Length: 246
Image 1 (cartoon, rainbow, N blue to C red):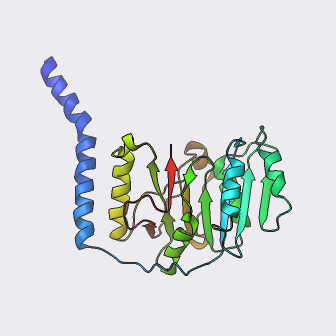
Image 2 (image 1 turned 90 degrees about the horizontal axis):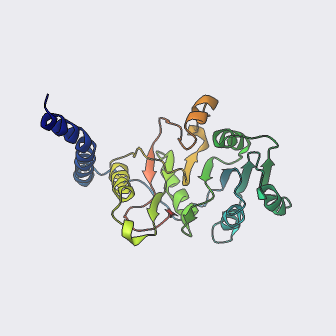
Image 3 (image 1 turned 180 degrees about the vertical axis):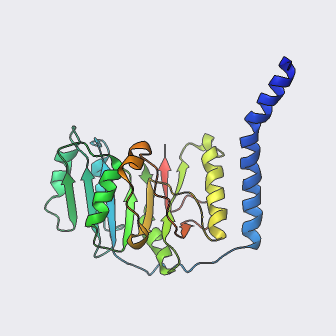
């Protein structure tokens, strides 16, 4: 095998994933036009939710994240906020202590290190409401996101609703993330998407499955693969009801 043949083989292997992504994106887009599955969305649905944050050493972001969810514009009557600090060694626990007087806030400050998955599993076991909202701390969330997520649960076939992550850097407008957003949107229009963006998503408690510890250790940001129906919260690719990543 000469060097030219070897280079051609390597080139073919390297561009195959790119061609596959482009091909699947085009297929999803065209298929979503002809095989759209409408869902019932109601902005009037105000079901209380259990908001879950599993964090570790987030002193820079935890206050703004908690304040965001507790603000009158975001809060849904009857909801609860559960924060699990997994053995934080910075100022996170001290900041959280400022909210301990609030009846609808549950704070778990573990003395020993807990993984994110362990924190999520424990928080879900405490949750009182049927709709769970999972959030990270560092991403910026557009106002109104929680209520837009909840509106999709007016359809009983919906099990999980995921947000759309975008970059605020206009130079990255056509990045890989935007392609994945488009694919998820098209898949959702056909009935169910495969991506769950961990920065912000909602799920019925009845379809949540406890993630095994070993699996959680290997894949900290991997969300459980359940048999459920998912629907992207945006009907368009506008920056609505989405987490914005920097």
